[in-house]
Image 1 (cartoon, helix red, strand yellow):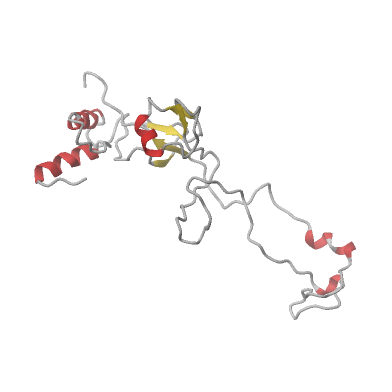
Image 2 (cartoon, helix red, strand yellow; image 1 turned 30 degrees about the vertical axis):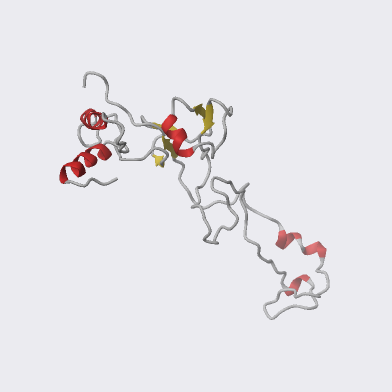
Length: 204
């Protein structure tokens, strides 16, 4: 949303700077923004988190618990009434809850997040919000000449049509090694979703 006059632009900057999405029907937003900024020391310091995030934004945090205004992405079923703005933003994409009074948050515990392909063709066939299991790209392993292959390529690997290798020797080259999953090097942080805008304590 953009203002048509310098004054409107200034007011919008204050409202958005307090992490509030402008709503023309809500005539109290400027006051809410001022109270929120004051309670945060005017610059986002203090206990109130002021980062201009919209409802439904997911961020990674360097602490195990989510700050005020955020909910940990743990798949919980939460109230459609208590978190009406979040429900309006994400609906039941991540779960229908009890299908009447609750809906589910995304569950990102232990997960890597991948950008939605949306027709690009890199990760074809995906539906927004869907999950994938781990996978290793299809590839081949060859067996060198010393394993008894009579027909092999110039690099010492068996080619199609070659006779079976000596099965007594296969374990020396085909045993799998590693852990229980395929993963890149990583750091564990807390994913949380912006659920509501904190309001300043009374008396501030």
